[in-house]
Each structure stands twice: as structure tokens, then as C-alpha cells.
Length: 130
Image (cartoon, rainbow, N blue to C red):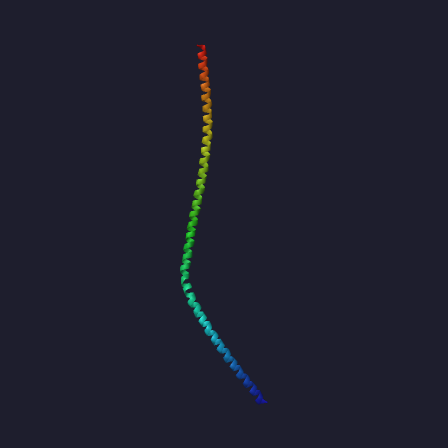
């Protein structure tokens, strides 16, 4: 019985060693594939990583340009607002001048008309007397 038990243990140990060898070979093969994948990934990522600082500088430069353009647009908007206000004020001044001029012209016309009527009436009155 001891021999049968010892034989079973020996066979189980041999099977275990064979399975472990197979597993270790598979792990070794998987490790090599993983190393190749990592190397290939590093090789493909290296140019991208080398370009990254330049890209970041370009993005910063673009952001600075956008900030400058935004400031210029704010200045332009303020200037347009000021011009609009000046046009409104000028329009009001012209409207006031036109209104006062029209009142003056109408008054002048009425005055001239009254003066001419008085002159003609006086002339006709003098002419009738003669």
C-alpha cells in the first residue's frame, strides 16, 4: 500500500511539474509578447511625446493671441459705443438747431410779412391822400 501511495504521489508530482513547466513557458512567452508590445508602443509614442512641448507652446501662443484679439475687440466695441453716443448727441444738437432755426425763420417771415403789409398800407394811404 505504501508503494501505491508513493507511486500516486510521484505521478501527481510529475504531472504538477509538467503543468508548472507548461505554465512557466506560457508566462515566458506572454512576457516576451508584452515586452515587444511595450517596446513598439514606446517607439510609436516617442515622436508624439517629442512633439508635445512644441504643441503646448503653440497652444499657449494661440491663447495669448486670442486674449490680445479679445482685448482689441473690447476696445473697438467701446469706441463704437462712443461713436454711437457722439452721433446721438450730434443728432440731438442738429434737431435742436433746426427746430430753433425754423421758429426763427417763421418769426422772421411773419415779421417781414407784417412789415411789408404795413409799408404797403402806409404807401397806399399816402397815395390816396395825394
